[in-house]
Every structure is written in C-alpha cells, then in structure tokens.
Image (cartoon, rainbow, N blue to C red; front, top):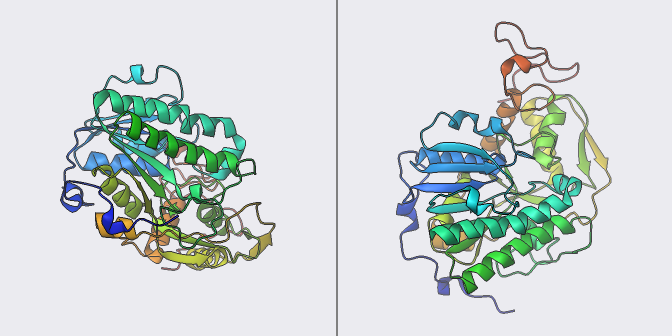
Length: 377
C-alpha cells in the first residue's frame, strides 16, 4: 500500500489551535457533550477539561471499570451529570434526549486484563456501544469522535506506526477480543461516515498514564507504582527489552480534543515519543518513589508487542499538537496521586474508609517494607 502524503489530507475548515487550547479559560465551540466511559481514567480527564472549557457534559458510564470517584469533583459543577447506563443496551439513544453537539465514545475495558475478564463486554461496548453512540450523534447532527487505541496495530511489524499501517493482529489469540473490538469500532465509525454522512473521526490513543489509573488494572505503570510503594518486588515481563512510548494524560486529552473540534475523518495517532524499555520504566518508578524494591522478571504475556511507538506527524503538522509534560514530571504527578490513596490502591472515596487512617486527617499507615518517607524529588 502506498502511503498518502500528509499534506494531501483534508481535515478541517477551521483553525484547530484557535478552536481549542489547554487553558481553562478557552471555550470550545460546543455547548453540550456526551462522554461515554466518562468515569474511567481517560474519560474522566476529558470530562474535566470539557467542563473547564464551558461545555455541559453528560458523563455516561456503567461503572463496571470506571469509578464515580473519578468525577466526584465535577458533580457540583454547573452542566455536569453522571448518568449510570450501559452504552451497549438497546434503546440507548432514547434514554438520552440531548441534543448534543459532540459525542466522545470512550466506553469499553481500558486494559487487556479487563478484556480477558470480560471479553464479551468489550466486544459489546465496541460493537453495539459504538453503534448506539453513533445513533445519538446522527440524531443530533453532532460531531462524533471514537477514542480508539494503538492496540489496533497489534504486534506491529512496522516501526513507528503510521495511521496507514494495517497492523499485525491475531483475531483468535489471547489479545484478539481487545484488539479486534477496537478495529471493528473503527470500521463501524468509518462505515457510518461513508454511508450516513456522519461527522465522525477517530483517534488512536497510545500508552497514556497519569492520576486516576486503577492500581489493579495490570497495566505497567500503575502496577510498578503500586508494587514500589508497597516495597514488593517490581515484576517485569520477559527480559524487559520490549518498548513503549509514554504520554501524560493532560497531553493526550489536549490531542484528543484538538481532533474532536475538527472535521477530521481519518484516524489520528495520539501518543508520546519517549520510547523506552519496560525495564527502564520500572527502574524510573523505583528511583522516583525512593523504594528499595528489586526487579523480578516473569514470563512474558503471549503476543505482547515487542515495540510500540506512534508516528504522530499527522497530529503535529495538521493539529499543532505536541506532548509537553516530561516523563519525570508526569511520573511525579502520577506517584503523588497514588500516595493519596489507601495502601490497597482503591480510589479515595470517603476518607473515613481508609484503612489505618488517623482520626485527625493523618496519613494511612503503609505496610512494613513500604515507602513511608517523602519520594525522591
């Protein structure tokens, strides 16, 4: 396949940089948005940025993997509503009369571990759920954005991965339900744009990290932080030489919303260019937490990608997007958010539920061998 020159791609008739900026004072040219999966890690940050930009938000989530705690601070903000609902249920569109100017579809299991536990749920969210979210956008003439994943490339044989690379995926392998559900949701979105004229776009989000990640979702960074803070061995799969490119959540949100307010119809990669090995990521976490944990190498998961880094030329050249938060600053913020949780890694919720909490607001007592001193920054 011959790649299409980026300069030849028509994406928008408006200025992206004037339409959206990360500053809270900036107002999006949208008045009301639906965010499916809005109580999840990335979804909650999208909701927060939209509300800060003056957009009324309906956050729709069945809370199967998201948490109401992630958007608790928004519940008292004008125009924000948390609505518990399964996006894959029949008559979904009728339950939300709108009208909406924008629909951001983020619903679905966020990690491969979630998908292994609930593979049919993942397929429903990306199949029936995508179709339902598209129906809302079609009804209201709203801009639709599918928040897809770099997982659509599978274990890539091309590096870095451009948007016109088709990927290397085993549909019946252990990662098949996760990878193929994302690929099908992209096909469905593209079909709607072609057949029904839906104003629809796609972003492929690569490895994103930051506050509000679940400690138990088995993704590398939250797992490493949880283990290091508890003084446990930090487990690295394989020999640790496989690579990932990391992007802090604030930068990812900025990129997603730049595409959301455009009229881009083709997929756009959003991800970091700090490609590093899994072993180095683990060592960075141990160093910044001040932990005495040691690395332990365990068997590598089947079909775990050897290398992953997005080619973000399209996002940079056409949308003026570039990541700004360094890995060190991003790691510090993420670790600090984990220190505000109880030792089991659950969201804070009501503070009186913290195990080991001192009566007058003292910090919980960390387990023996954990880190009870200030982190090393």
